[in-house]
Amino acid sequence: MRKTESYPVKGTNSLWQMYKTVSFWKVVKNFIVIQIGRYTPFLSMKNWLYRTFLGMKIGNETALALMVVPDFLFPERITIGKNTIIGYNTTILAHEYLTAEYRLGNVVIGDNVMVGANTTILPGITIGDGAVVSAATLVHRDVPPGAMVGGNPMQVIHTAEERQNKQTT
Image (cartoon, rainbow, N blue to C red; front, side):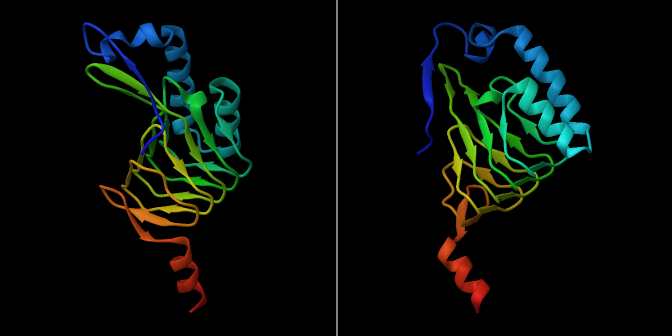
């Protein structure tokens, strides 16, 4: 189960009411910073931009590949551990706007995690230390530490213990 907070709305759908939940100028600033970050090949600069201007928590030696899209509206709800790789064109969401409500949830990605390209991480997700997420995965529930997961819908391919046993044999 994802850990999100739900906020009901009345009238038009919640996305139409977006600027009641987040400042227009915050969205503009975040959009500009994220667009610069998506295209910069300098990982330390990208991490600095995201930490400084978006309030994201990003560990040392973490690499966000080209075209990674952190949440435009609530990037401060994203934490990424140290020595983690987030693959090309991955989207990390901390919000979801639905017809009758919107939901917010923290995203916590641990240390030494590998997230493959074109992955989508939904709000309220925790990816444990040392986990591997294969390319093009929809991460819709928590990933245990050390596990290897993949697919849409996401499934556990190997637990941490199975991965350890494969490496020792």
